[in-house]
Length: 227
Image (cartoon, rainbow, N blue to C red; front, top):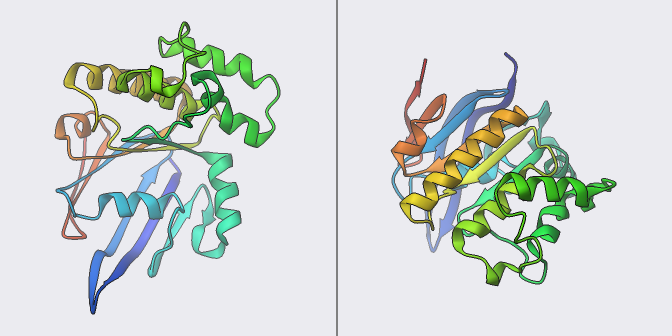
């Protein structure tokens, strides 16, 4: 099966006062199309930085990233944004819904950016799929954390992404609500055939994935696969 994401010898350093902070050092791995992949590690291990680099939200100091057949280091900021809009979905720990838009309007945003016709029909279908068909006209402030994350799930799948990056998707949720969101995430992912990349400190969540990459101190400690 072809790789949708290939990372080679990736390093990232930040300046911290007069010293340098080596956040990632010589990271190499591949993710195949359609698989689920977890990146785990303690706080400060570099996993969120790695996710941002893989999605083209930031640029590495050294190394290369090939996402959906395109080398990110050859693109400028606008070109990376276009690639994300075409191929990438996101789910964040803090939901990142637009507060002035209703739940349905939030789900429609990626489709409107792509000029999709009848996006409201698909958005409504997705809202029904995540169990929020009766909450479409509510604003984020009128929704619980779990409901906001389900809106974010619907939004993430609205542009039919090739790959979906989820950064601590259950980090702000209680266990029961988190379990429901995870179940929906994997169900939607399976139905859509999307590649799923999850950053988490939750090993129970990571164990649901096909492969697990363990980071510590900005380095790969181990990569394991589930049969």
